Length: 377
Image (tube, rainbow, N blue to C red):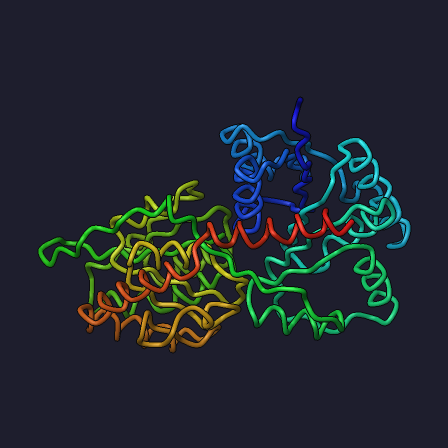
């Protein structure tokens, strides 16, 4: 007799590919071990090409679909656009017929149409807010709509305590659970021991090039760092380009000190030769790259943005500096370079701390929520 698997629709209104989307792929690729039949659904755009490649590589069935507005809809009212997206989302759900939906939100207000469609069809849903940022309270009408959706078997997850607080401020409700992002322990690659004789110090940063990730702040600090430590090289892993950052690189004359390697599917392998991991984000959810650096034992220099300060304890398992503050970042970097033995010890402590909550635990806790919704229904 054939075993009927639970079907889960992993869906996101994502316009591109980054940490939130990597998270969704990670969740979907572990479906089989939980007896799940997964289907991945996302916007079919040129910017999601990497998404398709990852799905193909993992053998995941996917459905590119149009849930965002068409170009001509910009002239329509926001209500008409919302209604149009609700109908498209509902059409996808009716076609796939999932038992439960896992919605990944790269922005807290991107997925209302998907939540409404699921509520109309009475399909249980786990909503994971991968990034919240500095939000403002929503209007009473929008709060009412979100509240109606939640009452139809929808449970919300934040990736940090800070994000949970921001969600409560914006939506006026508490999330059901905080489940931290974490790297998978079976993908950890040990970093090489530091060689005092080598001619370069590799400082690795991971994230899409732009203001949110603080690359411009780093460029401002680099001239001061290389003045005392000219052997430093700043390795940037992440897609995208930013005219403002490019201008600053040319202005400060630091082109030769920055190596932009673009998007990398395996950050862990890039950390093998890293002497430092630097996360200068102005805004952050709960960085997977930070978790991977902890797992590899790489000395960490990190802004206190988002949930980072919840996993990095200042001068215990890494060094924190103030977000959106180039001077604070510079002070942290100079201190780290001057005290590399202490930084190495902190890296080993971070490695131990990582083992207390791994990606496997993240996956387990999230699937437990989905199963509880299915059984409750």
